[in-house]
Amino acid sequence: PEGQANWTIEASSPGDGGGIDVVLRSLAVHSGRLDWFDAGSGGRDPITFDDLNLQGQIDLRSITLGGTGRINTTRVELDATVVLPEVGQPSQAVALALRMPGDKSELRAEGTITRTDLGVMPRLQIQGRQLSMTQLQESFGLTLPSLPRFDLDGQLQRTEDTWAIDDLVVATERSDISGALRMQVDDSPPKLTLDLRSTELDLRDLGLTEREGNSDESTSQKRDTLFSTEPLPIPALTGLNAELSLNVDRLVYTGRPLQNVRVEAELDAGKLDITTF
Image 1 (tube, one colour):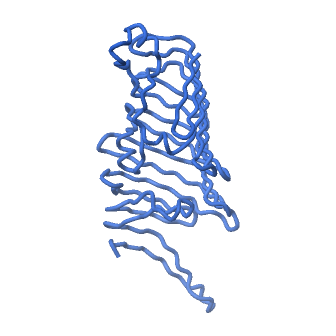
Image 2 (tube, one colour):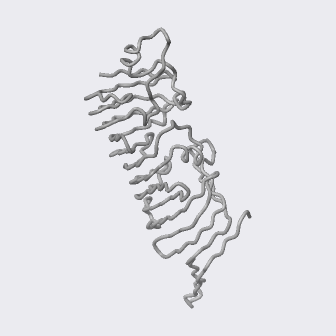
Image 3 (cartoon, rainbow, N blue to C red):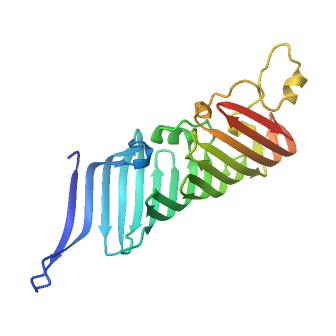
């Protein structure tokens, strides 16, 4: 009722009194709205596309869509292909490209989605270019730390109680991180496990800089402390538990490189403990 849709339909009769076969060939949506609903998220609609202007083609095997829309205040361009599952098969192939022309960000996903009694289980190769934490925060309502623009690659999949990203590669202009990520969603709060490696990591990319410290501290004491004891301004820290293992070949902190650094971190009930080696 909030928009207009045009449909192209072909109908034919076999001529034996067996009824009419109807095939949908194309569709167009003008000023429409789409709510992405996840029944496992407590009945919430986490993503809403407004002002949709889509054109689509449909054949016996796939649906292809292309057009524009808006997620909150962010204008997006959307291309998607969904291969229709064969009869009796729970899996189908999908490909999605989401572009934000205002800041040249792009997010792509390609793989399969399988429907089970436990919900939708995706297995997708994801690729992001020039992604912005600010845009992701505004578009999807996430609470994220402030980071510079970054590229992202990885294999996203869900099992019964775990979301995982394998073969993860994140790169900014100054830093790179690779490894694996696991999110155990059946725990309360959820538990995040990260096993990561970096050839070069500049802590300025993580929003960490040399702290001012107390006036009673000497300059050498402040510079010998890699991480501050002051609370980090990241509200998301209170919403999950986490374990981190990070090996860094070259760590840059306040302009001074450190070689072969290992970081072990544990986040429990909002308290973050970090050990460096």
